[in-house]
Image (cartoon, rainbow over all chains, first blue to last red; front, side):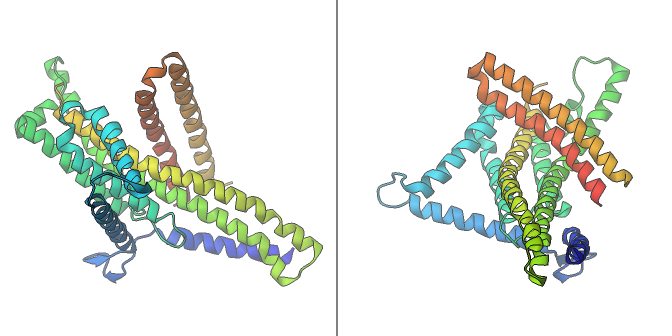
Length: 272
Length: 64
């Protein structure tokens, strides 16, 4: 049992390393001024993968007969179809066509970032508040720009307050609406970051639990250590289950991110 | 016991009850009107995401 207790001690150290991995650190340069963090690198890798995917899709599509065929082309098409119907048409209504490129880019980028983190030893591009805040800021500026374009600058600021409210209460409601508009920036980024952080923490802890029960086996192979080692099979099953859940979460968070952006755009341009 | 863990437990209880209520309402509405299933699914996912984000913020606060 001594081996098991020392294994537990090493786990708490590895736990610290696991949490430590999510703090911002610079690969090149300095964090305080200008530098590149690991998450920016993973984000760029996800971006490169996305470009490669689109290029491969374009090459397959523009082959001689123009008829989509094969699982790859049909898969990408059904994904784009899903974004068009569920995210854009469902929430935006008639003006979906002009916002479709932005929302599709947002969805695919967040999805790729999340999925890159699912590979062992790779990290999600959306795994630090800096990266997610950047993506959320893009969405924020986009819907503010749409609002300004539709109503003009002053018109958009005035449109934040709902019509049909009496004069003094009007201003209070307007202030609350402005506050909640800026809060969207925070909630969008924190939701994505928390999902990625929590998911990877849980997966990391389960993977650690798999290892600690096997460790006594390396010291001596007896009936007792074999019995202890069999515990790790249970943790392995749980790890696989959690991995499946995380794959689902990666997709759902990308969907929620794009859908909320679509809802905000719709609120900015719709008549109150 | 660490008070943070207790706080996270409270957080999970709240989130569980809310998501269960949402899922129950969504399921019963789908049973009544199967034709609005697609739209309802979107609403359900949105509501669940809002609730879940609070729970996850609790997790991060507890672990930091």
